[in-house]
Structures are given as C-alpha cells and as structure tokens.
Amino acid sequence: MSLPADGPWDPEVIHRITTLSLRARQQVEGLRLGAHASRRVTSNVEFADYKEYSPGDPLRDLDWRVAARSDRLVVRRHRAEDELGCLIVLDASADLLTGKASAWPRGAARRPPLDGNKWGYAVVLAASLAWALARRGEPVGLQVLGGADVRWPYLPLRAGEPQLARILGVLAGCRPEGRAELAAGLRAVGAHLRPRTLVVLISDLMEEPAAWAPVMAGFREHRADLRVLHVHDPAEWRFAMEGPARYRSPEGGPALPAEPADVAAGIAAVVEGYLREVRAAVVAARGLHLLAPSDADMVPLLGRLLAGRT
Image 1 (tube, rainbow, N blue to C red):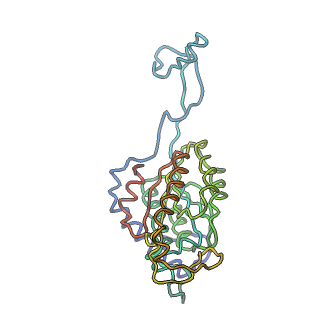
Image 2 (spheres, one colour):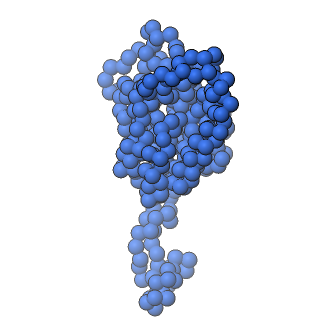
C-alpha cells in the first residue's frame, strides 16, 4: 500500500504503517468476509414525500393513515440512500497505555508497540475494521479523541485506497496522551453524522459514564448504528499487580499507595457496577456493547461486530 501523499513521513511511522497493514490484512483474511452482508443500502430506506395514488402504484406504499384522515389515496415515496459508511471513533487517551508492554524501551521508538497493551490492540482493531470495509468498497472515516501526533484528527467518510492509506497513516503516527474527553468528542461526532451511519467507538471508556452517557444517548436522534468495542486489560480489572506500590493513572493525578491483595478482594464488585453503568448507557443509545479484552483473538470479535451480535 502506498503512503498518503501529504507531507514528509517519520521512518518509524512508515514502518508502523507497513506492520499495521500486514496485521490488518491477516485479521481480515481470517474473517471470511463473504459471510457478512454489506451495509450498502440501495433503495426504500428514507421517506422523501407523498404523491397522489395512480393505478399501477404498489399498494404496499399506500399510506392508510392519511387515507383515513382525508379520504385521499397517497403513496409514500422514498429516497435511495447508498454507501452509508462507517465512522471509526478511536480513543487515544493515555489510559490506553495500560498493559504488560506499557513501559516499552523508549529509545528510538516514540510510540508503544502494537502488542502487550490496550493501545496496540485498539489500533490494530481500528486498522482491521477500516481494511475490511474499504476493501469491500464501503466509505470509511476516522475520528481520533485525544492523543498526540495526530496528523488528521477527523477524516470524513470516503471510499477507496487513498482513504485507507490516510487512515492507516493516522493510526500508525498517533500515540496515546492526555484525556479523550469522551463527552466533547461524541458531541463533535454527532455534529457531522449522517443518518444511519455505522459508528464504531473503540475505547476503554475510562471516564465517568455520567459525563458521556447523555451525549451518547443523543445518537438515537441521528439514527446511528452504534457499536462499542470496550477495550480492556483483564489484569487491570482484576488488579493483578505484583506487590505493594504507589499506583497512578497515565492521565495524571496523585499516586496512591495500594496492596494488590487487599484491593483485589473488592475489585470484582467495583468492575461489575461500572459495567452495568456502561451497558445501560450503550443500550440507552440503542447501541451494541462488545467487550474487547486486549489478549483476545481479534477475528471472532470483528465477526460479531460486523454481524451486529453480542
């Protein structure tokens, strides 16, 4: 795959684009894409207007409610809506650095490895999804929330090889930093969202659900097809750390002393309560919530995502 033509590229980014492209292609080849129907819609999906009934018009298109109110026979006409597309929304906050490889040797490499941490898993997920849809001719876009070295924070929906190259370039170049500010980010997504667009949020959702849940619920008004890939490190949810230490969030704040053995006893109840909140928020937005453990096989997860099932 050729690089997007915009500007000079860091050698590390070039190498990561090549690696990401290969990893994404491997995941997609495992999917057997033919088993998943295309999201492209070609007719009868959005109401346009009425017209007077004429002999020969399909009876199924008659609006009987109008007929009952006015004794007029009118036919509902629809506007064809094709290439609905998929917008990938990627959380690039510092909390995505959690994992066994979160403390990588920071010599020449400015970006974390694509294995052993939530960030690498999230990036390969995003690249694989973009590859799968773009290779089927579907328009794909990308919105990055937070992060650093983000070449284009927002890429609107487009189809074709150049768009896939741009998306892989952004994914390879950016690195997790700061906060995603999910509420503000989702609000920005809603501002340029077309009806019936597939929106895939890839995030660890490590911000208070009370802040972003009301914004996510607004996606119902856009008639968006929302699917959330909830990336997490299983060890993080069990607090399976080694020995007492001072722990802090990659997003900042004071370091807190903790004995993992003491914390682990109550962590399951905390995680379950948190997951209830998250699921309720996604359901309120009529979305699909899929857990994405950072050590899990990606192919079945992508298959369930594209099929729209848990």
